[in-house]
Length: 123
Image 1 (cartoon, one colour):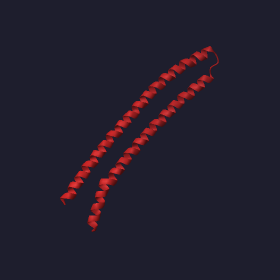
Image 2: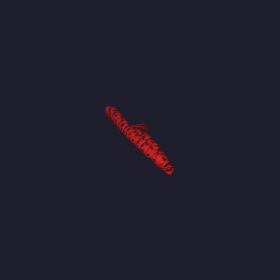
Image 3: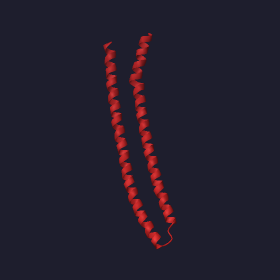
Image 4: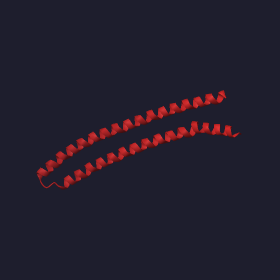
């Protein structure tokens, strides 16, 4: 096998297998990073609310404090519910973006493979 043939085979193998695998791995890694960041952000927000409510419970000293605490609980529950909805929407959007980019990547790789195969068979 000559060097030119070996170089051509290496180039085809790179363009058909390694480059698409690296592109998909990079896309997956970016998605994972975004998902983990969203999860850490959500956990931090939920933890902050929980700790805040626990501290507020410690401050109850009378009936008025209890009333205030219960009102605060209702507000916290409402805010948490809204946050959960927003977080779920964010994750759904990230999933849709990942699927779209994955499909585009697969289509591009299929076109490139088809073009490469056509070139190889023409030679």
